[in-house]
Amino acid sequence: MTAQQPLKILYLAAEMVPFAKTGGLADVAGSLPKAIRALGHDIRVSMPRYGRIDPIRFGLQEVLPAFPVPMDKQMEEAAVLQGTIASDVPVYFIENAKYYDRDGIYMYPDDAERFIFFCRSALEMLKRLNWRPDIIHCNDWHTAIIPNWLKTVYKDDPFFAQTATVYTIHNLAYQGIFGYRVLEIAGIAEYGFMYHPEMADLAEVVDFMARGIFFADVINTVSEKYAQEILTPEFGEKLDPLLRDRRDRLFGILNGIDYEVMNPATDKYIVQNYDVEHLEKRVQNKLALQQQANLKQDAGIPLIGIISRLTDQKGFDILGDVLDHVLDLDLQLIVLGTGDPHYHEMFSRIAQAYQGKAAVFLTFNAELAQRIYAGTDMFLMPSRFEPCGLGQMIAMRYGSVPIVRATGGLADTVKDFDPRTGEGNGFSFARYDRWALFATIVRALENYKYKDTWRRLQIKGMTADFSWNASARKYVDLYYRAIAARGKETKLEDYGVVRK
Image (tube, rainbow, N blue to C red; front, side):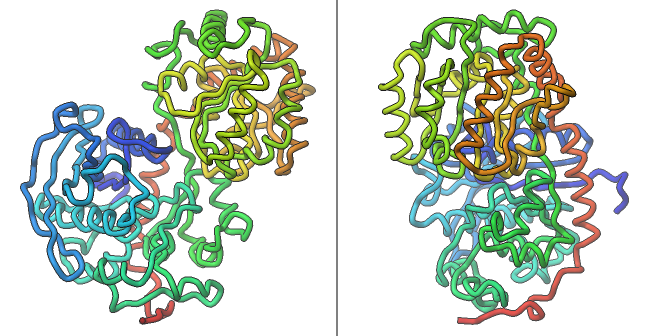
């Protein structure tokens, strides 16, 4: 296959906007396929049809009636419904009431079975549709079994003889770790556990993420910096020895954001639309946000926003250590998100103690999120690690200047402002330390006093290109790399297995 030929790609994800979302994976799955389709490739998406996905609302039509799917030496039935995104990207929904007709998406005791069934159904679906993909693009642990299957269960199946796999790591911390029984359910018990001399735990558990990394033809993660970081023990989540073994097939491609959706000139959720040529209009969004959040309405007070999962990973441990000091400064804070209970308690205390200065919304609200991007002066992301991060890119698109820790995708997208040279588009700190964070917030506040300087920072962020265009081309290049790499995999027997 030459680089000029259009590709056929099946993109597999556990979640996808607008159908179901818990995190950034859903945003990527809803945006990247559209950008790849625009480059002329036949890309199609598959995901489970969770109970919350209403077939009538989304106009889903059955394309395959119930068919048998091998599961644990027996058969379960799957049907396939079809919808679309952007009018020309097909989305295949795997339907099975037993596994997916539930209120939520994750955190069920049988999650391993649910996603094994999704993956096996997707492969069997392809045969019934008689659509042979050149690439199966898998995402996170939920779909990591597919590269494993194509090198074992399906290795002699002529239908998949020319199919290569790409495996994307969105967050290495969530690996999908289960017990031996999962190997039986997946039909690969005869191959046993994996073994690595530097990773003894692999011989005792089924780590889906590790299997995706080992068996995929090409692996990538969602920023260049994170691809380097995960080769180290600090960021490698105990898989760094395996990742170092596969580093010749490991790449970093920065996520993008959907510029059609994330556009302050057309955003239906914000009070006043604006663009980079009319930034003076933006202040109306700040005043409206202050009013909605019961903060003092004053355009001159710097307003910092946070939209996040409230977890240690996102840096709320070091922020919590200095939060009272931060709120003693001349600023306002608005927080939107949910997460660990002790952070709910921490922010609830802050909201009570600093009424009129701090507002906290322990929920997720898409409309309020857009208003925070459009109405804040600064956007805070002090993450301990951040594979990519979308919030800082959306914030810049809306003219909110980011304050971040220089890690992963945050380091790739936010360059620290130097007032002497004018270089940089935000404020960042390297050392994961509460006082480094505090000093960076103070530095941002000092620069906020200089309106011309601040306006230049806003313009830099708003005119940067964080769309999917460039990243989609890099993914297409990655697909051709995977096709070239297919068949050159490390042999399982050379790597070592442990059989129960």
